[in-house]
Image (cartoon, rainbow, N blue to C red; front, side, top):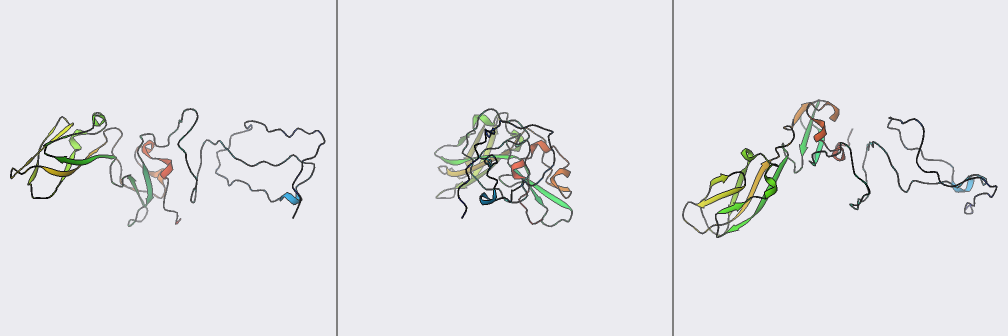
Amino acid sequence: MADEFVPGTDGKDCSEKAGGWGLKSSRYDYIWKGDIDQGTYPEDACPPRYHGNAQIDNLQVNGTATGRFDGTHNGTFQGTINVQSWKGFDIKHPNKENHRLRHICLEGPEAGVYHRGRITNSNVIELPSYWRGLIDPESITVALTQIGSSQDLIVEAIEWGSRIKIRSGNAATIDCYYVIQAARIDGEPLVVEYEGETPAEYPGDDSQYSISGYDYDVRG
């Protein structure tokens, strides 16, 4: 096994240079991997370096990306990744040739939000205050699951897009789970099915599409 590389002492400047220079390349080339091992590396050369940290304007991943994000960063993030804070993914259509399928997570054909919980001995469900201006009040739907006994639950009214009034048709004490869903009001409606071979052919506003969910179908 070769001895550990020791750089020469001929006075050359081997200090690390900051930043980069030259013409910006827009190509998605593979990162070059050197084929000179430690044993054959020239003794009079500067010591090689590897990228512990990196900066890049755009990144294309063709396979699987692994790693960990610790949730910390310096500065302000700017770009088109997840502009609307919607988590989207785009895959080949499962049963239509030359088509693709785009969904927003939770998987569904809209940018939806939900509020769920349990209500006991009350007939009013207060919706989160941040729903005002976030969701389309006309899109609100309510699902009720009675607990313990039949209560003949009825949605009596949806008031101002901020509270749900329910009642029991048989005058039972109300005890139920609820799931309330609504569609986001910002952004244009999602085009669920569209003709095309790549996400670049999406006919709607592509800024609502997260690059982090580029294409989970890696079968080619």
